[in-house]
Length: 254
Image 1: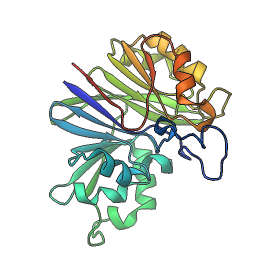
Image 2: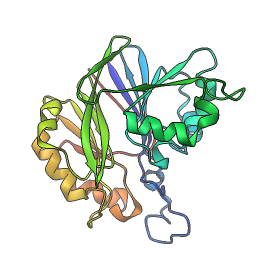
Image 3: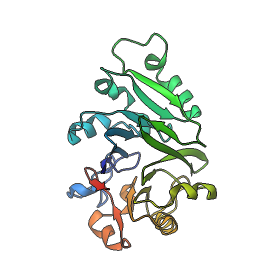
Image 4: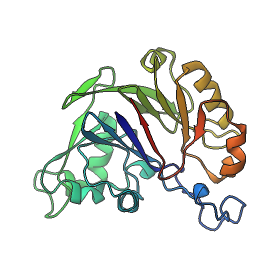
């Protein structure tokens, strides 16, 4: 059994967005309130976090998950790495491995030298950066993880496949050769920012088009902004077996 805990499903500003008075930001429906995107995957008795944004502490308090075995990072933008310092409680008894591509590792070393130098500041998270060969799958304690190259506008970033689940955030396009890694999925988690064009994110319609191409059994939209619309209205526009995720959603599959 694999379980996916959707810790956060919103874009970089979260929903509601500060100062905004649109109908989504003023909605009292908790399904319209989104922290920054992150998921926790429970697979083969391992707990693998994908991205660790600035809402991580709040997300973990709400979810009541008490263990993380590894962290996968998709890219260096703050809404995906801003919570790494809050990994302290999860790394007191062990070194917590973080998997990421070399360019992202270098960015984190520049931003967080107090955590990532030989003589780290006392009390910082006990984390270890593991640089990936993005063209190869790797094994983490019996779990095969497959990096998937996607493009976030001009920025190359990573998605990941674990078992028959794949996570693709912040993308505009998927290089043709990467579709082979997305065959025979039970669950696809894929970003859909809003309905009108954005320079670095795909639209709702573009996400549905990629879902049609990949043909996973079930697909869940993430990284939504307030411009995507009200949850209760948008769910009526979704094709069969496509769902709009929300914070706190838990999905289980064999």
